[in-house]
Image (cartoon, rainbow, N blue to C red; front, top):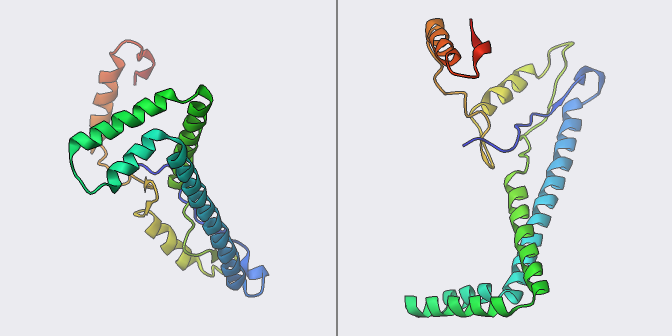
Amino acid sequence: NDSKTPKIILVGTHADMVEDAQSLADDIHKSLTEYFTTCMNDLKDRIKSLEKELENSDPRKKAKLHNKASDTDMELTDEASTKQGEKEYKKLSADKKARILSRESEIKRLYHAQQCSIALPTTIQAVSSKDLSNFDALKEQISSSLTEIGPSGKYFPHLEVPVPGSWFQVRRFVRQQSTQKGCECMKL
């Protein structure tokens, strides 16, 4: 499952030129975290608002809510209620149907935005190439990121995939592919 978002590692450079560089990097990280949290909360609130609006305007949603709220688990009642919701939906004006479709597509877009949000790193390393300060921590952060899983999948899914063992296997594969039509340029 490939990640739809890139892996981000934030690095503060030239730490030797700033007094207490790691503290400044931590302050920047805190500000970014607050900003990203606010953005995600806004997305959640917008989704909740649109879903509530849909519940009130779409008869199909009302039928589903009625089915969930009822104490009886009779499929016939659920099916009849769903059909009734579909009938009521068909009676709506084209304007209302367009508004409902617009809200549904907006909700899908917002869910996608939630899934594809960038995950901030846990820290920002303030490093200096002059005295090599904090390079060990940065190296550890990079190493640990190779196996991390982001909000939408693995960042580096091809890392553990087996690769052909020898050059001869690769050459044989390329030659086999070069005999197919349209692959004339793949000759070795």
